[in-house]
Image (cartoon, helix red, strand yellow):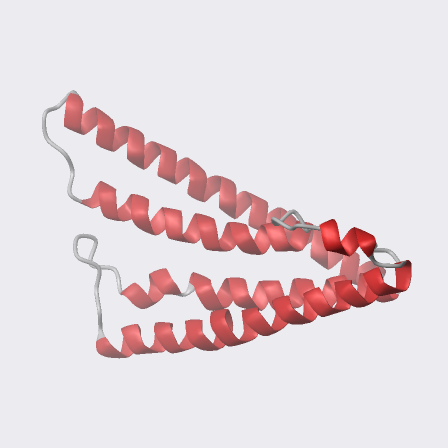
Length: 163
């Protein structure tokens, strides 16, 4: 269990660094766009597309990070009414639902989307990046969410996770 905790902490730290870098890139990109449009009088064509792709990666990878830290939005009114054993069963059920959603929608659907866009050779309009690379964050985040759900189940089993 200790090795799993270390791996979990390292994965979260790597995700934090990646998210900070993406956010920094997004801020620089948008500030550059504002500067070029209002100070220079012309805008660069690539900045809007880069901002859009950065926001996609930031939000989807950020969702996986929030899942790892269990900081996602939840309403626990009904959960608080359960007994302790009922709360534990509810936690198992929630993690099962999260795992299945990540598997079906994010991993299977995401791999299908990535494969289709790469196979068809679809490129972004301005940057000319294969769209499959942009969409690749979906199955990557889905796999991370699945792993985090299994990690959370192991914590629930060990009575180290109660809410």
